[in-house]
Image (tube, rainbow, N blue to C red; front, side):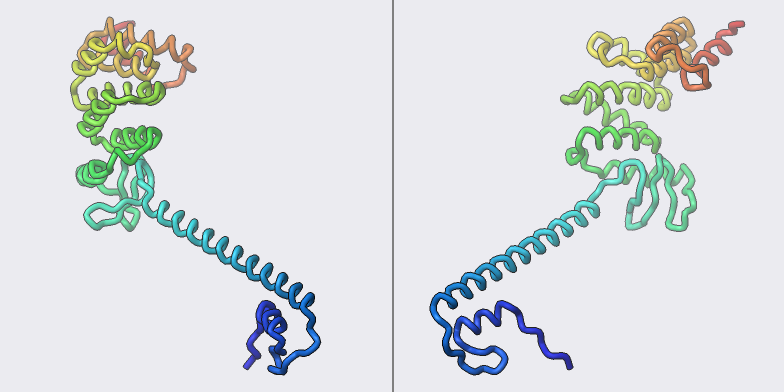
Length: 253
């Protein structure tokens, strides 16, 4: 068996007390000045050792807090979720079981509604709240999405947040087969929200007018979206699809 290691502080304390720590014999001839020097060194070492212990404890506490924070992290669009005791993977509205198989939309809709409706929005900062709204839109929890946006529009938010959620709101109303409500919302509130206009918002409204077969206004809003987007790039993005729809349904050459 290896001999137990003796700490330096123990050796110093023994010397100050006039005892050889290894033999137990008394030590003679130590003057007071030497004892004072040894006492100073001992106090320094003890203080330094205590500081290191405190620092290590603090680091361990920080690590524990970091683990707890990670454990409590709220998944908004991608990650692992648990609903009714079952574990799933969430990826932009799609739900996968523990084997990696995608769950059919008919069933995943119920799972996602249960998950999202239980999230406490009061605990989310504005960036997380926007991710939450996008998440429920991707999940096709459209009624929940419009209800949440209606509530948030009554609160104080940043310019960028309001500008981002307006087209999500009108688009969700369209997907709920309520294009007239999307149009009425903008007509009733245009003066208030005019500063928050965006290409995405006007594209959504152009689609809403297409839904009700009002192609004159559909083109007007599509042109607004086109102007705000800087002319577009010619690719088949959402706005170009709206123009194609107007041309096809309006019977234009």
